[in-house]
View 1 (spheres, one colour):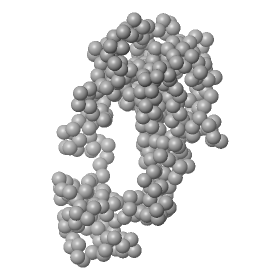
View 2: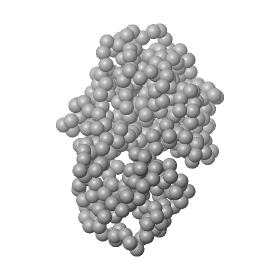
View 3: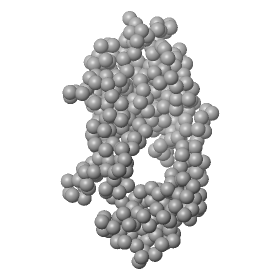
View 4: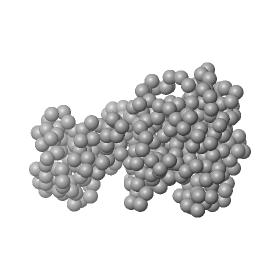
Length: 402
């Protein structure tokens, strides 16, 4: 994304990333991540996967979630330094990194970065072209902005959680994929990269306010349109795409497995019915929601007559749009995903590969999950930040929260 001539001219103030680490369309982009949990680390991981030189500023002490840093895949393709932000010289070290960075990402509650002396005003003062990305749950303003929260509460508040699950049961929790990562991380990445384009053109940085409630609400755009048109009921499990439709749902097999059916289009539906061993002429009208319970019962009876492996063999490689519901370990062994390298084993860990993919500037899994402080002296040298010299003093307490 950076003009090569400009990059060469800038070598007097910054060094290019070492050759072994130069891969991906964001090669040459420098990112500072103030350590936290959840969507901000994932966003920084994605930037690192795309080739950015990501330096994670860890605080001394035990990880909040107690996960061994060697297995925290969201910290791959990063380097780590240790900085005690509560010490006298800690904020200055972060500002020195920000002065040499293109993007800074933080996931504190509103006001915390300012109190620590590493907020937008302080960082943009030393680097007017900096893109300052802020990842929160509730956003930087509004009545709930200062309150703690997690994925489940954010997606509940914007109506997304209420759409997922059987109408007779409770809402189904989609891990932390929908809020933290889809509504949070991906919107933060889109925001900081868009702002980086502006900064490269104008020389002016800015603050990107990425709130999980905003991003997750944005993801419901199609459903909101269908709701406004009368094509969607504001109730879980009664609609075309929420499991209410008998040809867009899951069915249990004889051995307790599950098959996912997405045969929406007429041609795919016809193939699905044929392979299921039923005659479409004998089935209720699929276009009449009043007949959906009968149709669901007929499909459920067929799937319940054999095991998941048998039904997988019937449908795989066809246009019936039916797939087995796999566990994480099973997914890593699926032939299609193995052929594409969707999952890979790198640095001793089975993990997702790179996404998306680039024909001319492919990324790479260059570095294993960063152990806190493992690259302190290396980053100080590469980024020419003398403020990182010496051992940071232990942190007194934590101020996490989104």
